[in-house]
Image (cartoon, rainbow, N blue to C red; front, top):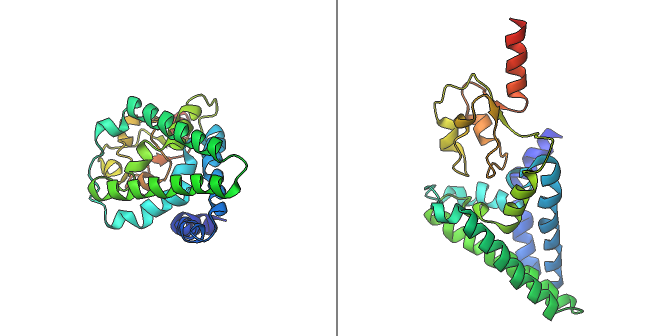
Length: 225
């Protein structure tokens, strides 16, 4: 199962490429994009933005393809601001809603709305990747923003944690595609709304201080001493 999961993370972007190519011959295929709109919301109820960092085909594309060309520079604060994200959510859903309304009853027309939305936003993410982080788009992706908002209300905080064994070497910050500083959450859950749980910080940490149930395990060890 673990091997299948890793293969998905590495190669699921091929589904995105297939969607774009096949969609050119039959725009009704575009309606399949509804899966990538609903799935992040459903997953966020249980695991936060886990979809964004592990299951999203477009995220896989940015990680495995665009990361080779990205300058990996810090994303401007404006693009990460709440105001900008709210604007993008309202704008995208308004345009999307109008498109669906104007093509209601026409499967091809509705498919074009979905297809155009995926292609345009993917191209925008590609362009931004050349200037900033390869995951720049993920900072204000409408579905990612909604997933982050919904996950903030979860009672079950099954997210990455940083134990007190962290030495603040800051290697995790350099590896994080979302520009987060996990070491700032030493002894606590990594509750940053932009954490997509991609686990790059987990792999990079030389002290193995980041993972699931890290703070609980640390507390148990201290009690047993």
